[in-house]
Image: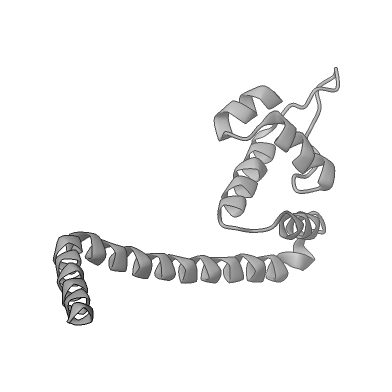
Length: 132
């Protein structure tokens, strides 16, 4: 698959894909006889992996480090698993925070007019007390 097709498939610009490869976020992509990138299934898996980790908030530097570890082979398996586990825990924490915020906002929206009426009533009482 060429870079344009990969770009369209994953919603990542061709410039970003080239950048990711240049800085080591993506391992070197296989090339055809003319030197054009020819993304293999393995390359596509990396693109998807990087896209998911970026959505999860992993930094470019973190992705470069992970890719380097991956290229070192089996001796880095535990380190890579720890990195992914730590990221998963961070995501779970953010999800809990977002769920809490969502629930609170849901409550505020559902009871908006009740709260606003009470606020307006309290405001009137304060204004009346200042007038007297």
